[in-house]
Amino acid sequence: MKTLRILGIRGIPAAHGGFETFAENLALYLRDRGWRVIVYCQEKGRDPTVYDTWNGIERVRISVPGDGASSTILFDWLSVWDAAKTQDLCLTLGYNTAIFDTVLRLKGVPNIINMDGIEWIRAKWGVLAKTWFWMNDWIGCCIGNHLIADNPAIRVHLMTRVSGDKISMIPYGAAPVDNAPEEPVRHLGLEPGRYLSVIARPEPENSLLEIVSAFSRKKRGYQLAVLGNYSPDDAYQKAVLDAASEEVLFLGAIYDAPVVQALRFHSAAYVHGHQVGGTNPSLVEAMGAGNAVIAHDNRFNRWVAGEGASYFDSLESLSTRLDELLSDDAAMAKMRSASRRRFQQALTWPIVLGEYEKLLERFLPAPCAVVRPFNDKGLGIQPPHKTPIE
Image (cartoon, rainbow, N blue to C red):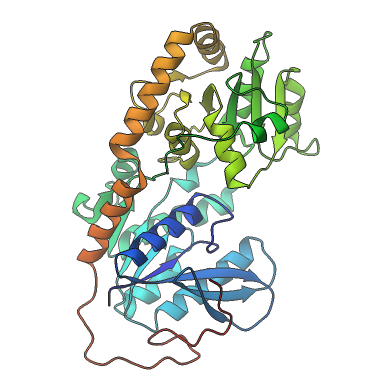
């Protein structure tokens, strides 16, 4: 039976971010195509490891104390150590602890690494963290059996380290949003079609201060819906809050998928300020909902959103783009259609997951002569379901 182990995420069902959403979609897709999929899931506590299933996907739920960076590093180590006791194909999402994957390479366990973004250039990290990410970037490139870049610009970066033959470019995907109720949007104080949306972590590299400041320069006749947690105790977040006009609405963090889908679907446009990274999930999801896109002008966003989007590189240029777009309904409708076309061309889940399956099949190990029984150390076939979840 084709078997895949997924490492590097918090777990499924998705509740944390883009990688978890991707892992959930990939696991269910492969399950439906006859694969056995095992996903490592991080739990908070000191309990023994739990083996269960969720919608036909096997889970290895490893408890670690706390939920900070050190806890995640410990979880990654325990996950790799468990996977190294098998000869199953592994897919590691992210390279932040790629040094641990050396164990898989030494044990002959095939491991494909999705190299995510260029984490070590992000402004939010200090010298120690940047050094750690830079080191693991190199290690992941060297010891992974194969690498996945989610954007052509990431592939170009990886080719400074390894041969292009070792890299496949497969972007992030999303499900189309073709309809959504208005009630969740109105409940949040928004009028369908009369607001722009922003979904991003409140960090300088995501241009939140520029977005809010440019939007707030004048009365727009639209609202700006900003998702994410903002605290006046954080200097940057306070600057964003202080720059906001009365037309800016801070909605906090929203994890309810139907509500987020409704927010996207009824948004007039999506403003995407990410300056670094690869194919960003929020941008892809906005395009899948048919949003007109105004994005920071860089090679990553240009490839994802294509020529049908509008781009800015400063507060001044963003203010100009907003003036142009919000006064031209025909231009906005044209941009919405362009987003849908670009999304259907390359960014749907069937396209993305199909490419993943083809790549994974290339690296499946040869069938083993002996099927080893399961034991509590995680070897062999599916364990008894101690805590079934269906």
